[in-house]
Length: 301
Image (cartoon, rainbow, N blue to C red; front, side, top):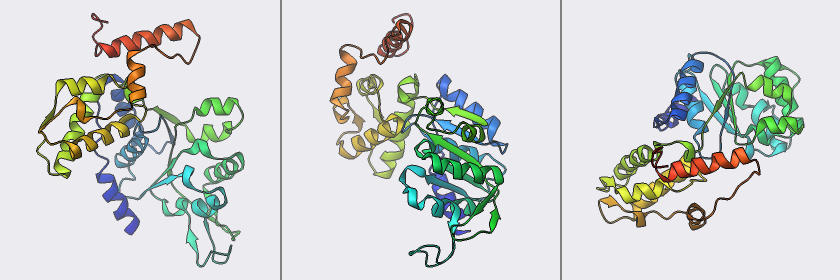
């Protein structure tokens, strides 16, 4: 009950999932279709694109929404603690095991389990995870008695997981298990028109939080935000707005209120760096860059 209460409090902060670009409308549409089912979902996207927001939206719109949502960052769990954290342990199973402890799979039973950064798992841990998913049961460390589990599994990674399968560093059979449905989250630089929308949304949130009377963002400042590439995606934009509101003394945010990476800004004005020598791909990159420069106006571009 306590865990459910905590997850509901956190979940209330994740309602601000904002976007009206074509790419995001597609994401919303997929969430709507998939949420009602128990299908396993894999969310792919760069850091800061909002993968946990998608996971929480899926849980919130699912038949399990009265149950708990458990989020686990696999990138932050030491390999030696993986089994204990996810599958639990019995008292005395190892030196620090002072009492019985259920793992995240057990705690999430009836609800949703979100495994973030699944691409970080070593092959031996992938094998253990696959066994649990296939058998729908866990065996705590120090025990030989299986416990049945019933979770809706949502996974996420910022890695190119299909390439990892090709390179034999991620198990194909595990990928089949976790990606009944895949949701691709676009980077912010590809979400045409969403930057002003997001910026104004965060303006409202942080003006209220810091009790500042900042009403809007100047057109010049919006243009500055639109021409930046946002390597940290929505999370970076959120922090940029928050910082600008804290530091600003006026009631309209100006370009100088935003401190964006000068290296990134410089690469905007100068030459284009290509990560490919494929001419079609280079042509695409140039077209995308020019479209961004003219805020998506095809005629001007």
